[in-house]
Amino acid sequence: MHITIIIPTYNEAENLPKLVSALFSLNLNLRLLIVDDNSPDGTGEIADTLSADYPDRVEVLHREGKLGLRTAYLSGIELALATDTDAIAQMDADFSHDPARLVDMAEMLKTRDVVLGSRYVPGGRVDANWHRWRKALSAFGNFYARTILGFKLRDVTTGYRLWRRETLEGMPLNRIQSSGYVFLVEMAYMAYSLGYRFGEVPIYFADRQWGKSKMSFKIQLEAAFRIWLVRWGYRDLRAKGRAARIE
Image (cartoon, rainbow, N blue to C red; front, side):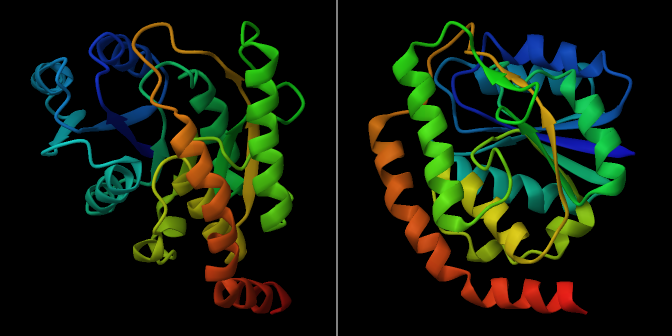
């Protein structure tokens, strides 16, 4: 299986070389697409060096500024689908997503359309050093989205995902409007509404060791509001998914 991993970056100079090394140590056929939003810490230049070191395995998409997660992933997916890749992964650059779990996710993808790296299935958990309020906020955000959208999945806010190319090709990704991490919820909900088969692999979600978190209260507030718009906006896809399951 040929897998393309899309890695959005903004100020990840300390993490990126370590992540690339960890990924290429796996027994997987990987290609990396780094989407850098003009990081002022030199992440883009480091990405170019890595691309020169691995000319057939690392590609870099430079963008003019901090344009956000939605456009980073949608642009990356468009480029990846123009290649011969069999699957496309989404993951953070800060080691909160353990690269080694990608092996189990790839195995599960053989019988699924999309596989999530899940913090909330048995065996999964968040960083042991998080404060209780942060653990509660993360769990509540996931519970809130699951309840409103009617998901049976356990972790709908995770950013660690592996998709079959055919799944992404069958999704009207141009309809996604959300920014921030709620983009990830909307993308999963679109696939869920269309009736695609999900799997969840337990992961340990570690706090970043280097660099600064991009999460903010503004992003969380936007997510709480956008969830309702997501539910309303995909009524037609839910009907299409139900019809497909009946057939």
